[in-house]
Image (cartoon, rainbow, N blue to C red; front, side, top):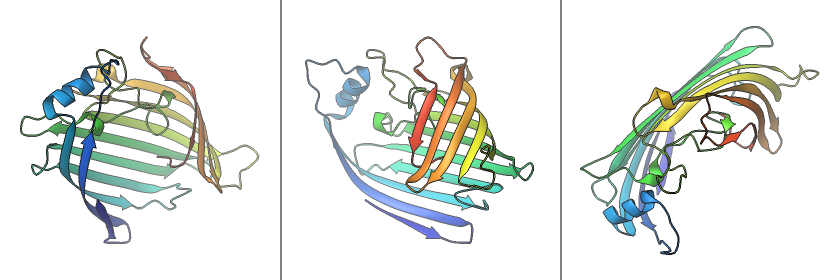
Length: 247
């Protein structure tokens, strides 16, 4: 595959990509894999080939990439499994993040994301292109990727063709380190889930506190969350840790 990212203004950039993909799935007959994999192989066979095209646009007017306190970030992506190959589907995703300084020390961040996908020409959306939710970056307090439809046989999360995420976070200096912009404390409210059909009854929520440190090794984020409206089959993870990107 190949992807190009082209800046077009001070704040805007576009991306264009194409990839030729081949997937081969081999199932051990002595293991129960659930209906998701077996249905896919029954529809497509155990090997698929496809031509995938994607495009995107982003606009970033935040005052800092690492330590933002004001501005907006918007991103739109589209992915298309073309009729040239076996997998025919589309995926659309949009993110909008807004930051507003409330004082010299407090910043409010609001983040919203929506994803929508489906199969084309009577074919289902490939399960490995599904959306997921749960964990740092979406809804903290729930295990990563578990706020999504589950396989009827195994009970494992298999993702959904739709996704909805909302985050509100109040960021402020870590006590005793007010001059260190690389270390911040925050209080947050998260909401979201992945679905096959949008169903607000399936939304999950959490509140908590988080610490973000932009260390020499990269961003480190710790969160302690209280899940709200959790169901009996939800996989909870109140303390979470991430080294790498943050939303």
